[in-house]
Amino acid sequence: MINKAVEQSRFAEFIDGLLLEAVQRGLTSFDQILLSLPGVYPSTALASLQRLAFKGKIPEKILLDAIKLTSDRRCKQMTPESSGCGTTGRVLLPVPHPLDYDWRFGDKATNYLLERCLEVTDAEDCVVLLGAPSVLARAIERDYPRKMVLFDGNRAVTDSLTRFAPKGSVFNCDLTGDELPLISAKAVICDSPWYMEYVKSFLWSACQLCATDGYMLLSTPPAGTRPNVSEEWAMILEWANRLGFRLLRVEYGVLPYVSPPFERNALKAEGLHNIPGEWRCSNLALFVLKRRARVPRPPKCVRDRSWSEEVFQDVRIRFREGSDAAGLEDPTLKTIVPGDILPSVSRWDDRRRLADVWTSGNRIFRCDDPSLLCKIAKSIGCSGRKLTQTETELVAEASEQIINIINLEKNEYMSYWEEVS
Image (cartoon, rainbow, N blue to C red; front, side, top):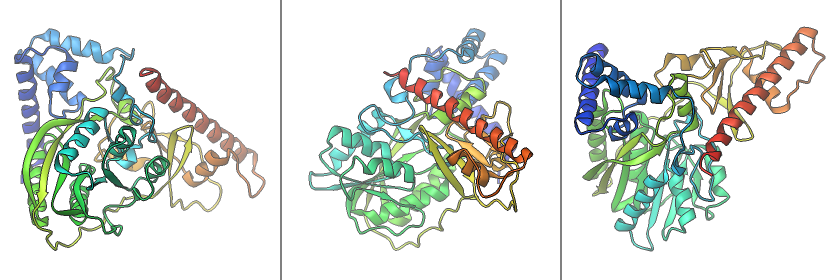
């Protein structure tokens, strides 16, 4: 077992090699370098440039230009795919929330996947989508000539798509535990969260829904995502083989994701601005199901906490459930990190467990009584008994905090749309 320090050191050397190769190919701007890399997080790429410049392996000007670019708070014009809230057509999806591990394909990726499905299916065939709502949205916009069926555990997303999709084509379903309907699809597009327990559950579901000799199109993390990706890929291949899938080919870096607003805010909290909207690209692995093996379903993925949600003008705010407060506790928001935006999107960040309130803009807060704050957010008030002067002041302060957050994040989302209009 390699310890974490050694693993991180080897990963840093790997990233340095990728960036050095990019510079040797003639790439000099940070935009160009980042887009050429296999899913390397922007702050990781910038740290690599700093190491390479310090060692004299790249011109210092490349580093200085990268720092100047990422420090400039003025937003650059984004591509249409970079709005972060959905697709560019008539079907709009809810703003992603970080607790849902919700990254969505941009139009380039959705069109690419739809074209691949046309190649492996006939007109009468069904295509199943596992956790890929932007593909269904794009199919609706294109009047796609295949029956499409989406399974997704995000209620806000499925409710939104139900208004546009044909009846019976959208299922709100936890793919790690809910019962699956009897469907035989010629192609299954699988886009699970990039954590092994979710990948295994999504692949098991794909096996149940895919016809024999049907195809699975699986989005997988590229090599620069994190240190153990190669080991994870080996585990994916072994699990897929157990289920009866056979790998046909892998296409590298062909599926760009839109950087959601919560990730953009996390990057800005790190001081990184003007990052390309589709810097993250996944690989596409094409499998064929040669036999449906009888393999027990993996254990259900259990979240460590339960959350309730309120939505205000597209701003989604989650409140931790299960408060043990006996009476009215202090419902005001308490700062966890400077600026209130968590400068990370990794689920392994220890600060995540401190959050009692979490917004779709990646703002996190502690709160002594999140259940009460949820009620305040919903009604901007509190009932049941006469409040003391101190309690009245706390409720008023909490109400003002929620209103300020809603206005702040609504303005952020509006700016994304104005830049692509």
